Image 1 (cartoon, helix red, strand yellow):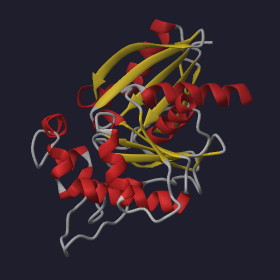
Image 2 (image 1 turned 90 degrees about the vertical axis):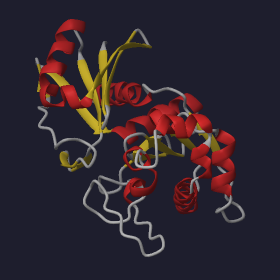
Image 3 (image 1 turned 135 degrees about the horizontal axis):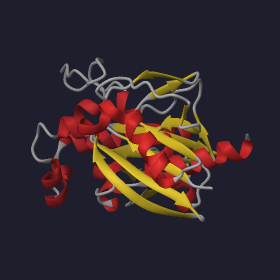
Image 4 (image 1 turned 60 degrees about the vertical axis):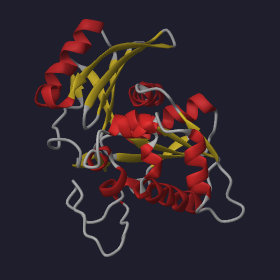
Length: 265
């Protein structure tokens, strides 16, 4: 079986192909340039690679099978359940990342956190995605009140975590790649706001591990994250902190998600 994994994020669209139990990178496109023709792109990929199904990792909140919110995308996309007669199976991008991270590291109870254009998080409990009533895990939109400031989030809310540490907000402080490469990101108060939020999530769920990824998250230093997070943890909480240095992790997770659903159907 050949499954396309397509990850649609706020900045990039990453595409992989899963066949013969291995992954092959296909391409990366600009979301800005290709979002309006997403269905056409999927159609062409299915035909070009003779795919049996598509796992769609997408930066959208999904509840009761419906796309309800897409803060970091141009709009909520309309994507059919089948294209060229092949099933298109969508899942939140952070959930796909967490599923793949759990698979790679071998933990069955984790929080997976992606830092890219925005901040996403997926929860894996007993090896399965935990959705709550559908959209559990949106740490990027936790309310963070700092010094009576009011920062508007891209979702329309006020003082969300993304207002301090998402890629779109960090870009206001300088070139994000340079902030990470030079280590200046660890000198920012925003980094510790992020670590505090992660610590709160840990104390809520007490996972085996917290695994970071995304184009920003995958390039953070593990020891800096460990020190920053543990500064806010109470005694008894001691999860592993890991970094998954794979920018295609969400696309690969989408393949695994689709494969699991197809095998059960």
